[in-house]
Length: 639
Image (cartoon, rainbow, N blue to C red):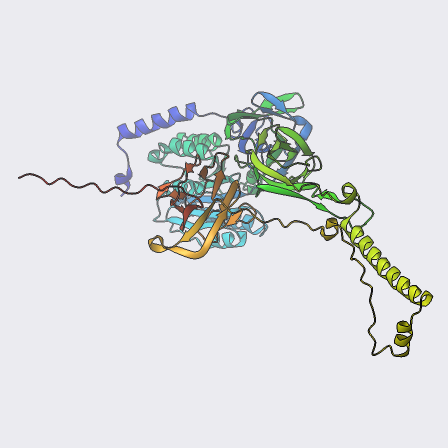
């Protein structure tokens, strides 16, 4: 049995030479595996742009983590330009602890009646029981027979797993299985990308065939950022052998160390292994980036005469101007004459202002503050706002006293200095003609009616008084008989001519109803076999219409799971064309079963449009002369 495990002399010598060569080439400093020049920049987050967050670790010359770093000791360098640091904080992302046990017959050696394996087992379990149940991190146990515990959140369960693992030390031979499985487990994604990993490798002195595999293990651990601590269970002096030196160099290559345990030494404090791995620094600063593409970031630490600068980390960032969009812009605004509640005031044209609503999209996905919004009418700024909410601008209409067409658009500027405008939309301002009445309209119709009524009543009263006074002054026989028998005698009634009312008296002031103009086009809902749904259509009376399932982003809300929140846009150009654009929808926009790109397609009468699964037919109110099919006779072939 023993002879079958031995290598031939030539192979043994070759293995020892390779191990010696690898040992001589490995770096001797644990600090070199942890950071570049004392600072390791691990991650740059761009989600909150224009504020960027970055994560880094810093170590002193001895390789110890610096835990009391101050903001004034940090310098951020973006694309070669220093940027001010706003926030610096230290936090714990957690540590993944993996115990890998490579048992060997030497583990059976006893000290004071307790085997070396039993002492190692108790040391690990006792440490696990002292850990907080709610602490960050997880615990795993790997052995030569497989994984015994995988990523346990509760350290008490981990302690129980260690106590339960009882290998057969007489028959179980040492191998690299436990270390290999520990490295495989370390490749699994962590809950946080900043979470550190460490392996406690408990092993006997490796065989010569296993020594040759240690360089690959060390390289793999270094690439994964895994620190390996080695407990060599054996005899004093074994650390000076080729195999022992190979274990030491593997540990130091990854930032760990070697401890030799023969049963008389005190075990190292495992907590000291984890302390440098528990913390990471997070900083944030206002970025100066104003263009899309790759960018560079480095962190510099200055402390007590030392200056450490990390290697530059390259990251990509997309930066685009904001995109303002008019919401349901009107095709017409009417101004009419109205009478105020106070009758002493003159009539006036209303409304005096019109609210132009808009929203702002960020095509690059980075929402940021808007610092200014302006309303441009015919190219001139007529209204501006510099405070949120940036959702509407009041268009002053007092200066518009005649009917005319005007072009409006909204211009916005964000905190980065990017300026963007909406498309120009034509709006007709319709002004009611000036009222013309008595005295040039200075007297209101209501007052004229009251005056006419008073005049008529006064005339009637005067006529009655005149008739009575005349009968009293000139009495006749007939009048005396009438006085004696007034019932049977006719009573003359003097007919006075009626006063003619001015035509202005029949004029009443009323706000003209704003009747919508007939839509030049519409979308008719269709179902299977292109059958139209009667009465189910969408009038297209605006110059721009947005379609989607979110009422806060779309003018026309389509309640269907295949429709995106903002699905498509339809533009009615000044020359009468209808252009349909896809707005980045998931299920796509289709015209006659052909996908529509963001550049858009011009619609024709009768086109079949699909927003996801919903189908509509585009119909013009005045399609003009439609092309008719021409039937051409098929010439008969001559035989």
